[in-house]
Amino acid sequence: MGDSMVYHQFNIAAPKQLLAPLIRRCMALGSLGVIEGSDSLSAYFPHPLSPKIIMRELDIAISLLSSRISGHRRPAVTYEVIPDSNWNAMWQTRFKPLSIGKCFSIIPPWEKAPRGRIALVIDPGMAFGTGHHETTRSCLLLMEKYASATSRGRFLDLGTGTGLLAIAAHKLGFEKVLGIDTDPQSIRAARRNRILNGASGVSLREGGIGMTRGVFDMIAANLIAGTLIELSRSIARRTAASGIAIMSGILNGQDREVLAAARKAGLRLRERLRDGKWVSLVLGW
Image (cartoon, rainbow, N blue to C red):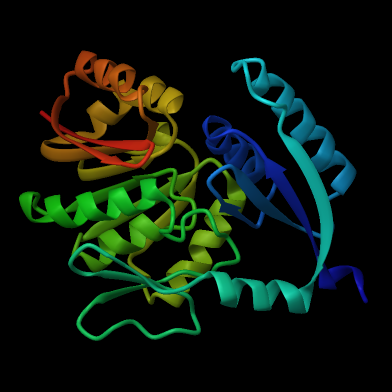
């Protein structure tokens, strides 16, 4: 078996409150995809990455995160090698079509969308952002709900990941769509998915919100609470006077701090959507 024909799988058993930051860390380390369970996750890495380095970095992250909570057993990490044939079979087994809201259906490349729905074709080579996570689903529901309340001129997907929300905005009829992400691997994944969806009108760039210009009729920021707080003023400056800003990726209990920062920046709450342990906020002027 050649080196290019295997993948590294890291399985992490951890308390629910640590899963989101651990997923972010895995993606930052170069994970191709992450599958999240109720109290565990599996992260997949390409063979050229060193499993020893990944294990060391995960151990450091776990030590830092575990110091924030008490009364829980330290997260356990196991590692195994997945042959290429098993990888493909696994994704085709686990990634099923998913219908969200009144119009969207998220499908892998080998499936067909149900008749009468907007197909979002996502390559499951990058699992985080396939729409199966609560925060992504919430963003899609809110985009669908509020798109008609805007002029559908400019849309910004802040932290685009797989490009799913940017592609969805394009298919909702936004004239100019920009997806940005500080992670170059995410931009590569988003570009693959842009091709799969025939969404050539979606612009994708590596970088942060500081590289953008002008205002947007809708902004989707599916990040984490700390980052949303830090970027609240920038998001407010980029939201058009009649525009909408969707902030997601917020755990229950953290929404008060995010909302306080958004209000301090001048934005007003229009809706708070809860999905399990996650909260999404819709804000405007």
